[in-house]
Length: 284
Length: 306
Image (cartoon, rainbow over all chains, first blue to last red; front, side, top):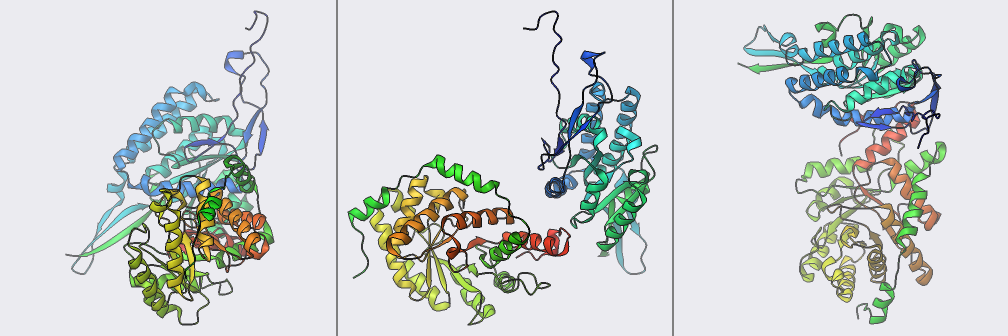
């Protein structure tokens, strides 16, 4: 029993990676110490204690790639309506768990609204961007969207939670699976977001959240040829890393989606960059 | 006079008592081993040369078998320096098709499953006939299944006699005896069946058909390795080993090789004495080899599907 004069010892959370629907430690065993952005809520006034964040390694990424690839067909095979429902459920979870995020409530609300925005696109974007094409022969020719596949997303760290949900909603609403690379300093934010993802009916592997040295892990992602696209906010990495990423992307014709930031939701044309256009000719 | 077994032989085979806990502990140690850099490349290439590239589906067509043979000969055409696989493993009806692609004097052996694979539930005379015809069609190796029904009901002599009869029917072909360990229930049974199969003249003992779960496991492989070592020390006769079924990753293949090296040693580390019964394993081995070679982790889409 705790006596009246004793302070309760806090049970602290290890911040793990979220991969394949599971919370796992890095295979490397490596963790980084970070200073929390706010003191524990039930122990106000106490000094914030350092917390430990798992650092995703090359092998963690490689394993996550396998799981994301496996999850991709199932996710893309769901109806747009169903994907929208799941994203909407994510919004519900974020709203409900606003307290869990180490940021101002308004920021969580902005993130929730953004998820709802993209959830709304899920069963409409395909009608907007698909087309019946005029051709000169006796064929019916139409184009439709197919997901690009497995995406790595590096949002601008300055955009915080909004940047993360913008990237993952845009990628998943188009039927892709996505690895979110989050800087170690944002570990707490990543953990709270992962917990919402884990409880929102999204199948495991559709979104993997990897806290890591993003520039370092991006280099390994560039060397993984099963990766289909990289969604990159300009401010997330320096110019050298950007150039290397562009060169490696060109090597394997990997899609690179450069965005300015998350202040505005992805336009329909940006969403189109997260898809392939498949064109079918049929004799009429 | 065919080889016969006595009551005392059977008692000796069954005297095996495998300590499950020790097996699990030893396998756990092997699983933690990590093999790196040059050793890893050597072992990946060795593993590739040990694969019995297998297709045993009802839907097997001549085209699929031809494709499989080409893949066994040249696992990845852009890298001609890679070793070819040890063998292809097909159903008896596909032997002639495979032989036509491999040629008469192929570095890739031609193995066929026979004896009413995978159940083994046919009269012995029909099994013997099947084996004779398969060898006549050009198979270098016969993968037979033991009569698990007889084994589990304690009729060891019948299992023994059947293996002896099949071995005889094989003539010059090598005989691999599939124990189907997933149906044997205990490691004690695995050890007893291994001893029986070796005593009856099997050139190889093989874990599984791949049609039953669990198929090959490291635990079962360890017990079979130990039985092979025991048999070698007693009789001086070397018997090979083939784990089959469920070995899909290069990492797992390396664990098998580590276990092999620890129990039977370097003498067994060739495709003459050790094989993997697998198909998708080849692509993962190639993926790891290319990663070492080129510094890029390949997409599985870059490799042929069988």
